[in-house]
Length: 304
Image (cartoon, rainbow, N blue to C red; front, side, top):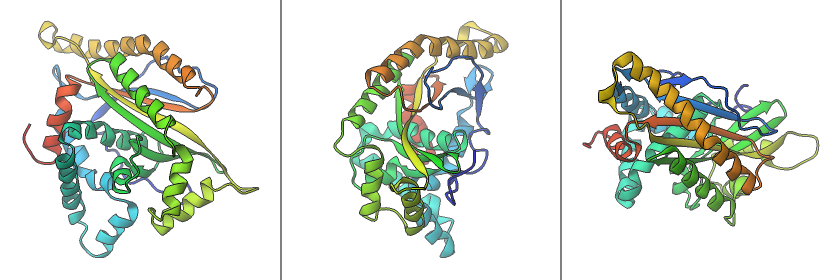
């Protein structure tokens, strides 16, 4: 798969691979259309996840997450590329001030962006920060464009959730998706509305119009859904030596997936979305509900 026509990815190449390890498994969503169900964990140093690489990875790409391509180009063309990250940090701090209780959830939103760009190979259309800036009140945590072939695209609407356990993470993510599916303006019509109201730069607008505006004899596009889940790994570090612990992490992740997979499939069926594509990415942390805020604070240079 390649990027959409002229729509390039914004994330620094290898950002995810530099800090995460993918876990292979044989589980499948069992849907008719293209899907992904992928597990990743932070690299381990002994029995601890290596957070420092995560901070650097996300700090390095914070500007690309916060700003549109056109905004970044204006900084670069004005000889002020260094300010992209600094200005992005200021916007993140503003968001923290507006909704301090929700600040930790931004970790899931940024990781959704990073994984979908690098591993799904779906360039960003809008990040959550951009959707918020446009005043959409959208439940989606990101919108990405996935090219399946030269004449077939998917607009992937992302939902993220960080919770204590895998079942809560699944249930709360799909509750968000259910709310989004019930919104007055949702899916591709939401993107069309943002296009109509000129919330997209000219280059991106032209490409989206080419892909999502209905007309005979051109490309087709469908809505698809991406879900990023994060939860507590739930293993006692003091009970195992390093080799055993590292093996247990991956075995536990696969076991957790096997446990929640029927619940995911039921949610998809109950929402009437069996004919849609789903791209689900799962990452455990030592304590997702506590770590999310401390990680975000470190990303912006603050304290836990």
